[in-house]
Amino acid sequence: MFDIFITPCYNKYNTITSKKEVITFYIVSILEESFVSNQCESSNENCIGQLEKSIAVIGSKWTLLILRELSSGTKRFAQLQKSLKGISPKTLSLRLKELEKNKIVIKKIYPEVPPRVEYSFASRGESLKKILHDLYEWGAEPPDGEK
Image 1: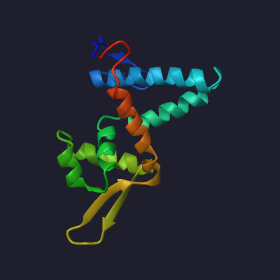
Image 2: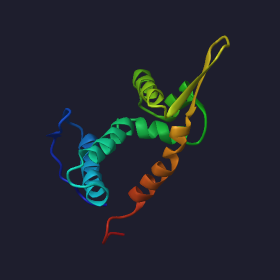
Image 3: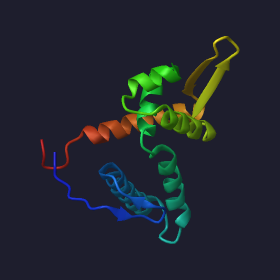
Image 4: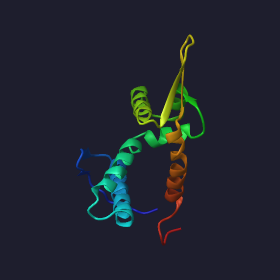
């Protein structure tokens, strides 16, 4: 692919330290700039806020991977943890709660012993499938001039 030399930086919310976070920050910045120039008047900060809010919901570490796993259907907590190698139970639980709070994921608890809990996309999450697919396709394309 191509080399990017990135140093840690700050955004208006917190310190960005990992390479992934820095790259995500730059991608979001580029998307915001492109989106705002094409869709918004220069004085309309609401457009930027909407994009920032969207990225804040799905841009956390592990969240896109969780959404990828759920895009193939309903999963139990243990199934998600097994397929997402390296995620801690605490992090998985926090990300699922955040997705549930934002009405992207539905948590269904069955009144059984032992309790059974399943996670699936809510209708708002279903609408993300095409966006995630398009993002995957975009990432698979080589930059101009590369093969």
